[in-house]
Length: 351
View 1: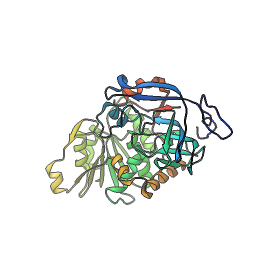
View 2: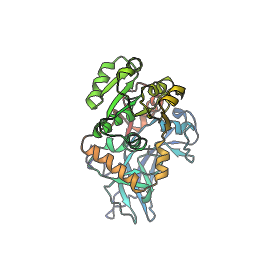
View 3: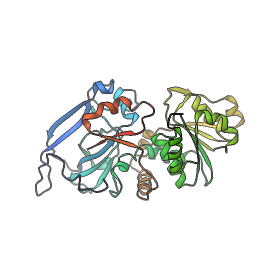
View 4: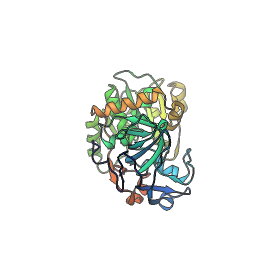
């Protein structure tokens, strides 16, 4: 899947000598109102003619994952609300097919630069300034999934507290896509990780898999509660669960530690004991990648981060999360189960 040969000519394309795509068979997952995703999302197919304006780029999406934020956006509960009718999806990788007055060229791979831009589609037209060019010698799966989970992991490891080689961090939900990226990036940075997961039938298999990825300690929530006193005191805690699980991370932190919440799967508030705040002087912070992207725009910091991540991928140090590829016409199972636990793999639309 690393090459371009399988993607250069989409179905239904009429190709002229000028490499103009006069008519293209397109598909998209569209919703015209907010609500239950399986009820409001519709698969739309049509022949589309594209007449590009100066600075516009026609792309064909190669793959687009299904993230929890995508589901929340369709429900209308996410802070970002697209104009209706909207197309689902906020992440993916696309190949440039045609440009007009752009430095991009056919065959280039690009990522959408705007949040929730509607990536569950086969084709789209974007302004050049809203696309980020990336190297195209990495896997389609890695490219399609690097903008949210690995980016969240990298920012949290770099932006909240100075970490040195040998420092420990702790995280819950450690087998999530973000959690797995944290493990791999921490290994690159020579950081040590304590990883907390929910108990399950295949817990030994999961622990072994995470250890192979570079995890130093993998504990169930029950094991972690009994082990905090014997474990090293982390300087950074990453919380995507909330509730009692988030409180446990406060117990684990050392003095002057920082507790960063980036999700709330339990739908329960984050609570820190008064003693943790007073006697250990821990700090409670939050992180939302979409806000970070909005603040950065398309500046050098953002582009450098994308380059960092793609270089990690090319070096085989950063891998995509477990993925379950599906076509557009099988979208309902993906929408129904993405917010549920123990999925085992993230759904991804492969075009």
